[in-house]
Image 1 (cartoon, one colour):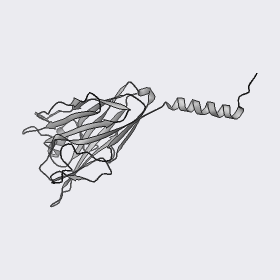
Image 2 (cartoon, rainbow, N blue to C red; image 1 turned 120 degrees about the vertical axis):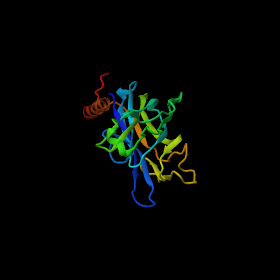
Image 3 (cartoon, rainbow, N blue to C red; image 1 turned 30 degrees about the vertical axis):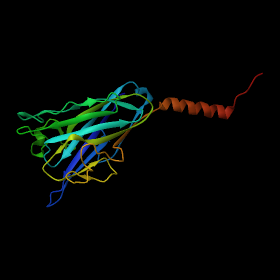
Image 4 (tube, helix red, strand yellow; image 1 turned 135 degrees about the vertical axis):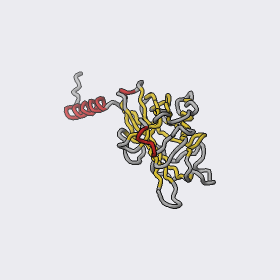
Length: 235
């Protein structure tokens, strides 16, 4: 069974004097939901197969570059690849380019996942969102990237995101949140909390692989029946 997940990045600009843009990077199932921390479940039958989640970005301000790194811990999955979407928006591609994502040999990280734009390439710009084929009007968000992973064992894996080496390109002061529960970091602050490599304490997502429900159900029924009637030993 191939399960599709959505990872969304939300950037909301408060249009008032002195206010920062507020960026929330969060994981959600398909279709995208309000900010939350991903809680996805596969069954044991999925072990040996692949799945993916998409990275979405919602922004009220123009972003001329986005760079994130993706990390996983735990026994359930191994990261296998990333694709940054670069559709034509009018006559020009969304991005000029970006470094190619590299998957660590351990399958526990991908870096970087990024795109950058120089004029006339638009990047992610609300002024021309409706002509970007990967802008999804129903959720007011852009499909940015796809992260692939293999399902490798029972247990839980946890996903975390950090700001990539080329960071996030915007002209506004920006508060950045990744997931729900951790406080925002100020992108232009001097406290070092929002620079390359910074991660939250709380994971942005959990992907669990659990035993087959039918196996558990059969075992429970078998135990119940044997407990009711008992075993009769014949010597």
